Length: 119
Image (cartoon, rainbow, N blue to C red; front, side):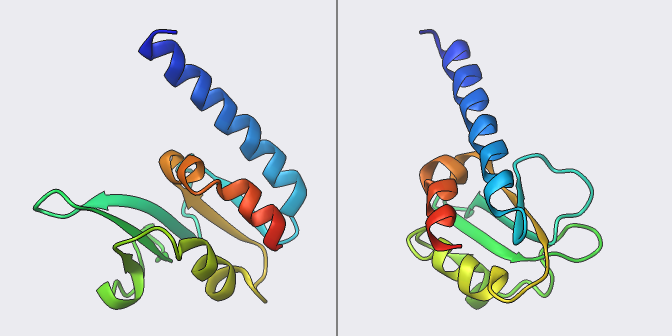
């Protein structure tokens, strides 16, 4: 399979999983990997100036930026705790929220299966 077809297949597979996810936990959270409007919460990867990958998780303001960005609260060096923080601090006890999650994190964290088990 060439690189292009692999990317198309991976994107199709992710979107199929994302649709399944919406059906299962629609009462709590709507996940999206497409930036449409302003999501309530964002979770994505970024890079530091010296090339290290970091993970951002936070509530958004009306412009879609992380609200009150705080390195100690919103920036993670490791992705291991992201799901736990997302469930405990953002989803638990909240109304229906829309969460933007970058494609790479949906796959890397096995996010859909993890949230299905926890919610």
